[in-house]
Picture (cartoon, rainbow, N blue to C red):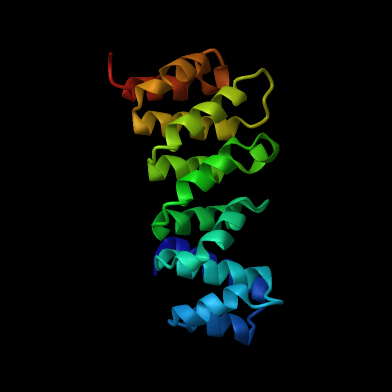
Length: 190
């Protein structure tokens, strides 16, 4: 069992209160049974998260919509689990959805995991979305420094020269400057 699945199952076991339904969903290897539980009416959030995660890491695209909703959840643990599963899902819609979530200024408080997912996916949508998100964070007193740092780290890891202007702009912000220096060092020279 990988670390992310172990962490998820421990957290959801507590949420489920040790219910028989939880034990059944954890033990099931039948993807059709899991997909049915994902869409069944009246399922608690823990059950939907568990089956969406399991379907996602198995590469079953029936989990896509549920995982995107969880990626945008107010609970960071749910976002992290959804990002982990989406990165393994292999659905071509994932990068576009993550880019939309990362650049949605109304939901910027929940953008950390979509930003990290974009950097991990390295899809064509990633660099423009990270640049846009970082540009918006380069205002005095912006409260979303962690999102800005994740953008900087992702842009540095991708090494795309289009990021040079926004990373250079980040140098003027003391909380971001060190990360920006490291990211700029990873970009190819002209």
